[in-house]
Length: 400
Image 1 (cartoon, one colour):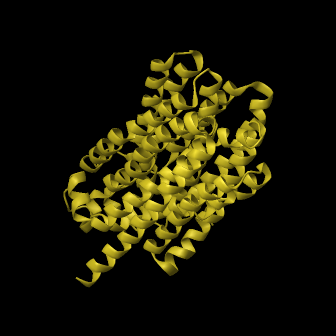
Image 2: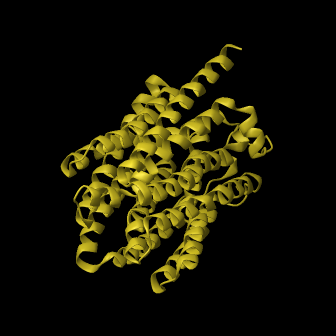
Image 3: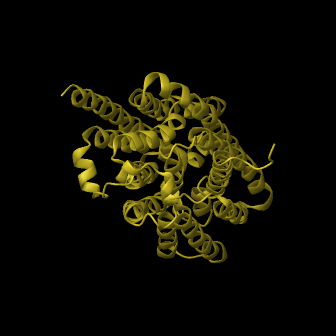
């Protein structure tokens, strides 16, 4: 037997590594970004502004990048992604070696949002290209491995911070970025000759056209927006919640580990649920559990119970992340799939990040952690209503 991997085996192996290093990299920065800026003397409200700016950048960069990729299929997606991450590494270098004030820090977060955090739809699209061409890509497992990497890096970074200080995680982040760039370079290049002819025949449409002609997709984007608005502040301001319940930086690392590690079984469970219940029901279940998360945290005043509740992430964001990708892939025309992945990222990690983090930072400064959790729970309830409405629209269209 040959020792070489099959084409599908190589795609999956490299895809797993890209997911692992990307989410490990994100854990070393996103998991501690609030703590870093708080240590640099900024307030929770200002931290919320910085994080919101990063999400705001994606609202513009993701659709533009997705539309450009759909219109220039000859440019490999992995090249676009690698270029974004290389630029992000340079911006992180500036952030590490300088101590800018409010406006300088805001500009750095804006740049990182455009080229790092919001480049993730390109990873989704890289996998979907091969999947739509008939290659068996184990997307949800790859995403689950990425979540587990986030968990491992989070807990190790928590111990690193205790020993070497908060800024040391930026060095770890840089090392993981280098590994990500190497894995991206080794990822197989997608050939358009591998794709079915029918799937490359259409001309890409505008974002407005996609939203107008896919009402069920648009309503589910709204559900994702409110669902992520409910849980993103809980993650980004987890340091505030942990401190409010009597924890420290080490406890924060444990909390992030428990939260992220639970996404791996969620990703494995997704495949089973998707095949038996359908993508719409999976999406509804994920939004329900995202709404429950801040509500349960609000009712929880004990640090040990707070840690015990972290695995609820498995049935919320753990199902939502792969579900959102598959829902976009199934509900937009083939010629618009890269842009479809960008639109779902804009509505979830983009707009929800802007609104959620600005709102959460301001509410914490004025009313405390529990007030922030109450607002998040209310947003989650709206998300559940929109998910139900999306399913209703899909059924009505099917019987029309």
